[in-house]
Length: 268
View (spheres, one colour):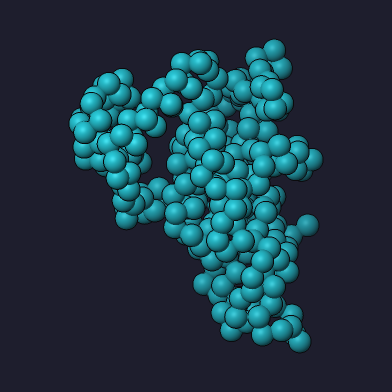
């Protein structure tokens, strides 16, 4: 049951029992967290549990529990997750890398997303831009007296107390943030990252947004992205409205993404 999956229930198990319990109970619960027929369920159905050693999961639980105890009252779950992401990899395959949080925050503050905007990242990676946009909207709708700042200048305790109508919360949680990535692992990471930051129905899809199969056009108010900036794509695979006549047979991805941004924004 759900109670068996609570941190307090299994965190003191011995290492062997902990690994077995997390693999057979907790991980299954997380995979099925949002029920069926949504992006989360679709992306998580093939996920596998890969922690191989009991000692490894026991040490990870110990570290996370110590962090949690030292940071009560702060929106810690998402922060822990983002910290772990930053430790896993600063750079990766396909030109992916995790944009530093302070740079994301600066860009989002300059763009200034608002409640009611539809915001998209067509190469979302770990969903850092989408989460920063969510936090920006919450900050702008939270009484300044409630906001706390950490040593990096990141705001916390963003409760959105100025958002009083349920329809505005529904739009924020269900229709504001859209992400796409062609790496299934990144899609899963994005989904979990957004859920841990309080976005319960994240609109994250597995899709290569440069190819002919991606049909989304003229839909979004804001694009926030740091797409792959190395590599090229075969021209025959690319959506026709992203290439220009006379272009090389393998156009650069950064130029294709610029065209994509223009095409998926709402005109005007």
